[in-house]
Image (cartoon, rainbow over all chains, first blue to last red; front, top):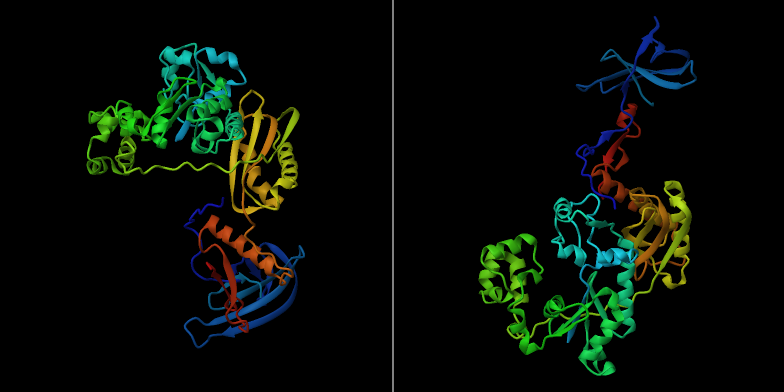
Length: 91
Length: 399
């Protein structure tokens, strides 16, 4: 009763879990986020840096912020210093 | 001897049982909804004015403007045919039904009971009932018995002895052979009209020209002696018992929710029937008597035989959406039971085994419906990594 649709879009290769997604962030003068995806940041709960793979062609240099938005939503965002861009990710 | 009882146009005759007056007027079985517009069997009155079975609807109505189209009634056809078979079985014949309107049986077992072949066949005709206009043919082979029944008049018995078989078959038309329509045209194009003409051709040449179908037809056209006595045997069916539940509604019901509730109730009653003897259902048929006359029937064969009400509901429920009209009566019938569940039960089930089996089956069904690569597993590759996306991968699982 279950027919094989043979969907061409079916995933055939391994994918990354928890891959970062681009985020719209407006920073304060000290570099911490003021607005995340057009929502005001109420509290910055935690901040940390990840510097890794500096010996490879793809070095990682990220400044993470665990923030609570005005709506009460908990979001983790980071500033990629290499790409000069903001991303959101479940850390 | 092998006997064949033939009731031409059985579908139409069964549909006309509810409106017998139409049997005397030009009438034909209406084309099936959504199918090619070709009429089914026709009454004698329609045949007399030139309307033939398989004719296009427009042509048939142009030939006979008074032609009445009789709605198909598959549930009545099934019920009446089962009735015919049971009456033959009650008379002692081990029947081997071929299609609706054609049934074979071996007379050897009942010849002594009735005092010969002829009295046994008389009994078979009486068992079927004269209202159906049955014809009987008897011969050493199934095909010859069918051919004999095809040339018999209503209520007549045609006996073909083995030594007369060739002589009997030779003048008969090729249309008796079970061939696709385009093959008849091909044979006619080659100048062949009679079974005898086909039988005289070399078998290898027929096989070269017409393939497997042609070879089979050529073999049927031969008399039994030429084939060294090879005959297709008749195997009597195991007498069936009816396992069905029905619900009649005071008013016609078209609401799907109500019908689904009725189906759930019918399922419960069917599952509680003691005749099942613990065996799970393999094939079920859902039928309905419709408000405007006529009926509707859908059969569902289950991939795994089961007695789980939820799975049976899931398999049968969507069929209710195909109902063409509001329903006066809903009927659920067990067509086939499986011999065993196929799952050996254990006294103490190991923890998680059942859940694991169900999970695997569920994943198998998801894969079957969405294609390979749609089911994935999370594999930890570097759980210690400071980079979140490097800790785990999503990997397709096709096992």
